Amino acid sequence: MAVDFALELKDLRATMESVRQVTDLDSLRTKITELEEQSGAPDLWDDPDTAQEVTSRLSRANSELERITGMDNRIDELEVLVQLGVEEGDADTMAEAEKELASLKKAVGELEVRTLLNGEYDKREAVISIRSGAGGVDAADFAEMLLRMYLRWADRHGYPTEVLDTSYAEEAGLKSATFEVKVPYAFGTLSVEAGTHRLVRISPFDNQGRRQTSFAAVEVIPLIESTDSIEIPDNEIKVDVFRSSGPGGQSVNTTDSAVRMTHLPTGIVVSMQNEKSQIQNRAAALRVLQSRLLLQRQAEEHAVKQAMAGDVKASWGDQMRSYVLNPYQMVKDLRTEYEVGNTSGVFDGDIDGFIEAGIRWKRSAEREEA
Image 1 (cartoon, helix red, strand yellow):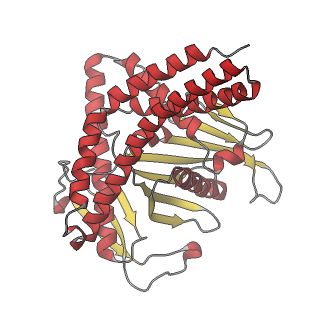
Image 2 (cartoon, one colour; image 1 turned 120 degrees about the vertical axis):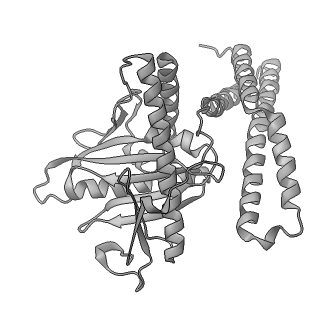
Image 3 (cartoon, rainbow, N blue to C red; image 1 turned 30 degrees about the horizontal axis):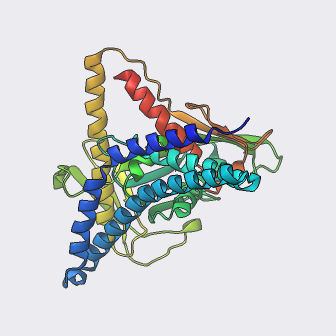
């Protein structure tokens, strides 16, 4: 069946128009101008941390603007290519146009998903925690596989990350890990990854080669900002210090630099050991604790709204994705029904399809609930 390029181009332009309206390019250009002025200040690098933040924000804002304007240019170029192919009756040119159309539809679809991230904290950077669950050593190994998957996903997109804490299991894998994804919209993008992940495979740790089911939990919270009003009285925090440790429990330094912070009213516990000093670990732990309390406050407010609206059936199940490596290979999201057979690609960070489907599903569920 011949491709209706006129219709496809019209749909692409309509989608890009909605993207531009939601993105507010005028505000984005104003933000870029302000950041350029800040980056040009002669005393900027007197404070390296502030300078790094300003330059990073400027780079990201420019990338976002170029991503949208560049897409408009690609659509214009595709239209010219189609006209050329039709006028000259060139099958090779039309084949090239079809290939570019498919690529454009995928790229514009990704931009469109970004417009769905309009929640209160969706623009924030993200803090992700992974904890091994039922399944013993297989679960700990699975937790480490998930950590690598998310770090590879971030690397594919050029998103900076920082691992804040890793607690190694005795035999293999991780008990838990916490890391940051330092890019705008990281929370909105990755929030759909929160929940219980399940792995089914022939256990490499079972000498009888039996199939094992194991679980790991993923938590995604928005990174706290200085403008957030999350104040924690000192008398509500208990701080313990201990020595950092690496795989197998071997000491990796000789000072009590690791920090375990407990919020007494809620029982929330945060551990940090990957920074070099106790002061740095304490600051990182406080930041993550504040972020978790911020998300808890949002959840409580949401629960109150649900109660006021009546008994609304929850559809956001806790167990959200299965990774099956035996007897067949399949990764399937249990909420969206999105699935792929390339399990090795998924564990290597190719999870954009799952994230996009999750965002669309979540926004649809929220609209139905509203």
